[in-house]
Amino acid sequence: MRRLTQTMITLRQMSDNFVVSARKYRPQTFDEMLGQEAICLTLKSAIKQGKIAHAYLFCGPRGVGKTSAARILARTINCEQLTPQGEACGVCPNCQAALHQRAFNIYELDAASNNSVDDIRRLNEDVYIRPQQGKYKVYIIDEVHMLSSGAFNAFLKTLEEPPGYVVFILATTEKDKVLPTILSRCQVYDFKPIPPEQIAEQLRRVADAEGLQYDPRSFDTIARIADGGMRDALSLFDRLASTAQNGVISYEQTLQTLNILDDEYYFYFTTYLYSGDYKRTLLLLDELLGKGVAMRQLIIGLADFMRNLLVARSPETVQLFPYTGVHAERFMTLAQQIHPLFLYKSISKLVACERNYRSSQAKRLLVELTLMGISEMCGAFKNATVAPATAAPAPAPSSSQSSSTAPAAPTAPATTAPQESSVQTPQATYQATPTPSEKKKSPQLATSQPKQYAPKGSSLRISALKRQAQESLTAQEASATQADEDSDATESGQRNEPVTPDELLKWWFAFADEELTDDAYLSQLLHTVTPELQPPHGLKVSLVSNIQLESFERIERSLLRYLKAKLHNDHLTLTTEVAAVEQTQHASTAQERAAYYAEHYKEVAYLTKTLGLRIK
Image (cartoon, rainbow, N blue to C red; front, side, top):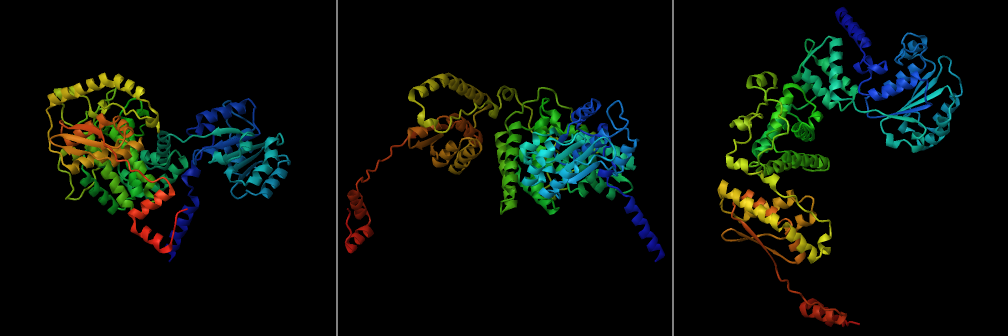
């Protein structure tokens, strides 16, 4: 019993001495602020020149240092011995009182709990009492957007013309909810999210100060998911520190504690999707769901992963890439092997899935359909040569290097374990070495001419003369394009696979859904009219009006190229015709309409006769 009592006393002492890292390592000077160099420089310059405004408004997302900056500013303008750099000395009585939160001239208010007119009225009365110590009486009002409309109006006059010894420092995360009349009376400073690299570096300093060993990837992961907030990052750090075994924060522990999916799984997802292997994709999804991974977080993570691949492809956008080291080299190696249009379309589908996820009644089916839709796009990119970036990417790590530094590959079920090297390892090459004829042939997607979409309704207004001029201008270009296609087909060999009606309709509708997302009229037109197979290789499309024909001609060449690629038949031809529509002569007068209905519908004739009805 005595031993248990001593243990409880020891635990109580430890809990009494523990301070969360977000408070323990709160910045105390402007130089310690992270990611807000421009704001700190402006405030220090104003303090050194004695140009203190009567009202400040600090805006920005949570955890970026708005309240910390307000406290530093309040302490600095009351410091008795400013440093030459415009910082508070930290040793004078005013600085010591502010550091220990016992200053009588610095007031911190929470607008969420003091948002009534009476609270602001009491504040207006208190401002006329001079400070007991220090030069300025400072009011720090946090979350000022929570004030009621009446409280805002009661605060206007005092905020506009306070006594000379009063300084208001307002802070908010939602600037758009603050009245314009309040904004116009304040100096507004917009705090930006803290860069991930600065957050990771600060976490390393904190870990060193706490005597913890760590895997650098752990802090890089925290910096990414903290979304620019240092407070959130330090809160996640405390969770890891409390579960650290023998004072070591490992990468595996970070993933498990924070419930984060390893990037290795995203490498596998991307590899399977780009190779068109939807079966392994769905089995890997099922494996992750069995481990308790949330589907929405999986979709968000996969979209962010593909976004990182997209920005890693080009030297102009590589500065937006959040990774460094060997992990970055794997990203860049994989990014050079995937067509950028595939990444763009995949991200669009994933974002749409995440947007519809909450309202969906079949969430898993929605996610599976999205992944299968991405996998289905692979056919358009399999034969397309990926254009290299303008600058050479970072070299891929050697097999021994990657095996020692990269995280372990996820364990897949025995029935779904990849057998081909091109799928098993995400770094594997996705295309064979191109032959001379393939080198000469430009990518199928890259050579397709951009769609010339007309504004809505323009097909009803375009004149025949304008259409003839446009056709004459593009005639030479069309003939040259056709000549190039014939030449390429001759060099690479003619494909002549048989075409079935089901396959034809499948890719016909796929073109309408995937390639015509920006033109609802043309997409609906392709769903309305269906092609008819004309042996041996002809496709015939019957339209009902010249307007439809005019619209269809804008996409005819790109549609034919798409069908040739999907159906693996280079002999396909496409013809169009305007079918004659029988014009039915309808009755125009009431008597004619009555006679028409009585003749064609016996019920109308029966009612007319039985009830003695007549048309006036």
